[in-house]
Image 1 (cartoon, rainbow, N blue to C red):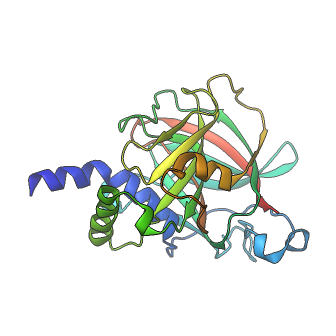
Image 2: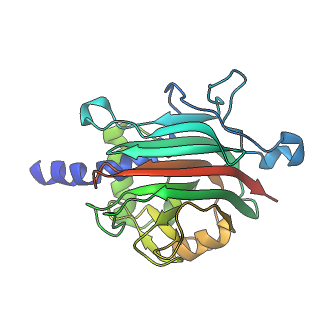
Length: 263
């Protein structure tokens, strides 16, 4: 089975990422984050804050997932800091990989919004290639897309990977990526798996070291990337934040805040 082993080796980074988005592990949390008060939003729209009840503990709704230890890849760092007087989630990589995942069930609300900034981007990334598939910061939404809508070969690949990893991987993942190579608005398919697709926000002209606010109509973006498969947007199953530099062996520094749904 050498050919099959080669395919599984080439796809493991993307599969670990979408597994991380779907599976809540018992990883020890490393940070906290400010949150919008629950009373400010309808309960059904609330994403849990990153901070837990105790200081420096992660809210149980958010879980940190990294690659297995035998891969030799250290975890990316997620830490709570105060930046210019405002709480922020500091996300840094050092030849590392990490994802925070939040299970969230329901139809996609009108918009997902957040603030982010990248102070040290990754110079060698190329998200269209396997060797360059890293990001200093990404915000992703997973969808419970009906399997009947997924092309046969991709559905077979999901089934195979689920059997190998033992994880219930999401059927469709949409990622918003801060990228320095491709122009803002560039949309594409992850080079490891077509079940993960992305939209570039920022682009090569985006200034570093400055906050920018993003507001995305998630259902519209899903239709843009998956609309040929699904005439209607399926329910959301999870939201995730990630950063990785394990493919390009780089270092990055970024910040995120005010991640929430808007009705």
